[in-house]
Each structure stands twice: as C-alpha cells, then as structure tokens.
Length: 499
Ligand SMILES: Cc1ncc(COP(=O)(O)O)c(C=O)c1O
Image 1: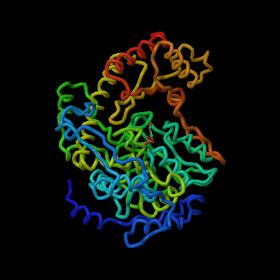
Image 2: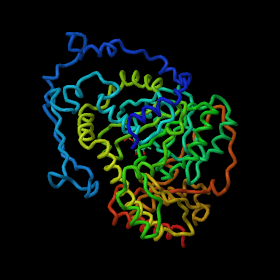
Image 3: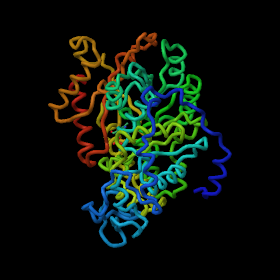
C-alpha cells in the first residue's frame, strides 16, 4: 500500500474537479442550508452553554452500551464461521459515555447533528476509498447514506426534474428504474452485450439524441445485476469519453464491487491456485479500476454499500463524489434522512476500527474466495446440465448472478405465444415453478422507456430481438441446492424445448 505522505503528494498534483453545478435539478438548486443545522457546530463546543438545539440530553438515552462479537482477522476459518475462541473473536463494546475509547460513543451517534456521518467512520471510509481507488482528481469526498437504494434516490433528486430522462443499461436493477419512475423520470435503455455497455453504441445513441440530453448514466459496472457482466477498463475509459463529450454524470452503483473473482476455469490446478491466500497488494491489483480512476473532472458519482460485504440490514452506504456536488447531498440529507442510523454507525465503526484497514481487506479477500467457490459450483452445473446448443452465457467475474441467453424462436410454442419473446420467457418461468425451480426471466429487468420527443430507433438484429434471458444467483443457497436447482432448470428446458 502507498504510504499516506506519498498519496497526499500524488493527490496534490491532480486536477481539481470541474464545476458541474449546471447539471443540478431545480429541487437541488432550491435548497438552502438550514440555520438550525448551521448552529449545530456550537452545540458541542465546551466553551459555549448552548440552549440552541432541540436535542434530548444523552443521559436520558436508555442505551448504555452495545456489545457485539464478530470473527477476527485474518479469518483463517473463512467468512462464514462464527468466532469459536478468544483469538478468533473481535469484541466490540461501544459505551454511551464519551472519552472511554476511540469508538463513536452512543452519546454522539444517537444524537442529532452529523449529516455527513460520524467523523471517525467517514474518516475510515476516506482512507479505505484511497486504498482501493486512485481517484483522478483532488477534491473528492464522501457522505454516509442508508445504502445504495437511498443513494440513488438522492442522486435522482439532486440532478433530475420531472420529465427528464436518464440512461441505464438495457437490463438493470428494477428498483432503480422504479425509483426513477416515481420521480417522473424516464430511464432510457443503453445497449449492452454479454460484456456490458457497448461504448460505440452509446456514443451513436447520444450523437443522434433528440430533445434535451440525459444528465445521468446509471450503471452497475461490476457484477452487473442482472447480467453478471463486469465492464473492462477499456470500455470504462470509452464510456467516460462519451460522458465528457455529451456532458453527463456517470453514477456507478457498485454493491458487488468486492465480489470480484478470478476468471472461471475448468483447470483443477488453476482453481487450486486461485484459492491460495492473496496478499493485500495482489488483491488490490486484481480489482477492476472504478470509473473514479478514469475521472479527471469529478463527473463520476460512486455509490458504495456494506449490504453485500457485511449485511444488508446495516443500512449503511456512502457516496463518493466531488465536494462541490456532495454539498448538495448534505443539504438534502439534512431535511430527509438526516443521517444513517446511529446504532449502525457505532457498531460498524466499532468493528472496522478493531479490524483496521488491513483486517477489513482480509475480510474482503475472504469474501472473494467464498464467492469464487460458489460461482464455480454454479458454472460447473451450468456447463453440465444446461443444454449447450440452446444456451449462451459469459462466466461472471464478479457479483452474485449468472445470466444466460436463449433463442425464443426455437421454443415449440413460439407461434402460439404470439412470437413474443417476453411471453415465451414467462411461460418457461411459470412452468419452471411447477417443475420446482425458480430463475428470474430477463424481461423483468428490461428498461424500455421512451422519450418525448421519441429517439430514432436503433437497428436491432433478429438475434437480439428474439433473445430471451434468465438470471440465477449463486449467493443465496448452499452448494448442493445450487447444483440441484441448475440441474432441474436444465431438465426443464430440455422438456420445454422438446430436445
Ligand atoms: C444494483 C443494486 N443496487 C443497489 C442494491 C441495494 O443496495 P442497498 O442494500 O445498499 O440499498 C442492490 C441490491 O440488490 C443492487 O443489486
């Protein structure tokens, strides 16, 4: 890892972010700092007796302490083993009183007043961010959120007005699309192939854009949901150039970033090697660079979350962006969520501070191993049980999902189902449930909003038009069930397609 001094020097030589405030929404432009929130800085000043804030006195908080046991680095027994002995255990004990330890005491975390997040946790995440990403400009920062679902809602409110359009991968996380719809925003599809966004198609789409240009591209570049694809660095650079040319912001929603794995292989020796312990340097080098690393203008907003690396119920995430734009998020949070849960911040920081940056990397390295094993089980079953002539897929290098493509025209009921690929998918899905297996049909993830005025239709091959897709996950069930489910789905496809 680069020493902090060298990092600070390298950062000082980088450019400052560009002013992108012209992209803000009317809502975001209209927010003023709340004078009461401004006054918060004096509430904790020991030189001032403040009668200014509507703060309950912490002695009346009925929570005296929080204690949690968690496994301890280097997690030799894997990430799914509870602590068994003293050496294996990280004891987290957070007290209410201040000054007892370096934790975020409950008297602080359970109190009003920290819209950016508790300072020590924000600091830990700043260090973590600079260990993982070599951000291409100087003046970045981060703010805590309640997870990426809320972060995306905050991004939409900050940049879009009702009636605006944003771009999204042609198949994407349906909650993100619905969040946009609720705010009156269209999500217009960007063409993807099995490797993710096709930058050339994206450029053509924007060169020929009709009407007001989209201000945002919403993308899940790593372990994409639902396709499992991970965008290469070359494509990230090319997409970034299009963003510069057409002046939009790239919003990378990255909950699966740390579920990156080595390339899938059938070679048993290579598999053994892939599971050997990694050093921190090897691990850091193995990660695909974030869009933040190609960003020299502060036009990337990164959404990070503890949901897939610690637990979804922590409801803790963070947004990394240029300071000048983040300030608008602070104003939004002051009058909406205020801040993420104080309990959660105290526990998560209590754990991370005891693990340290290095221990947290050990945890992430352990996750990589666990997900590699699961991915391999799923793909072994896919290769063994799914009809080869019928299915096409790319082995995922990240995330929780595998995704495969079929040709709906080969289905015997294609004509009876009105030659409609979505109906064929639905039929396979419904009959699959009767057969005892559930994989999710691709059209549940389709983005197909139109703009007004309408965009020119891009040419589409018959192969694309009649393709159908299914998404499976290898995260949620044990290995034997995973294999059994893929086997059942393979049998089910063979019956459906009369092979
Ligand atoms: C792409 C994507 N973004 C966001 C989320 C939700 O993240 P969080 O729990 O941080 O709100 C998910 C969860 O399934 C997801 O797949």
